[in-house]
Length: 92
Image 1 (tube, one colour):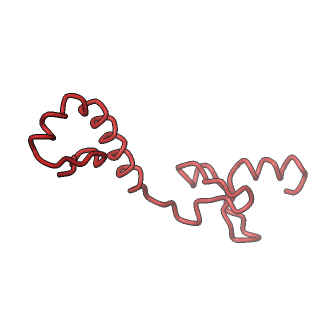
Image 2: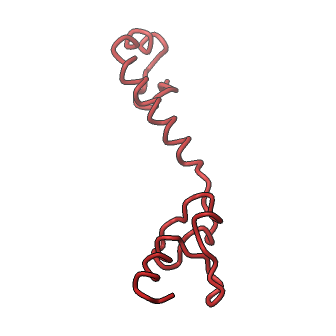
């Protein structure tokens, strides 16, 4: 029988599992929490492609409309950081 919480230990019987429980409890809880975190974080939502700056390739901070500009020349949305850098270089 496997430990269903942490999946680290296998037991030959329920009696063996009960006998080992005191020793295993702390490690089991820690591993079970790690497994839970992995499951939660792997369900993350991906951001649409348009929410990344095409110049620096970083995600545009949310809310996107307040933290980016839409450039008509290339029909792309760029982050305010890249816009500021372009202005300092005299490009716009």
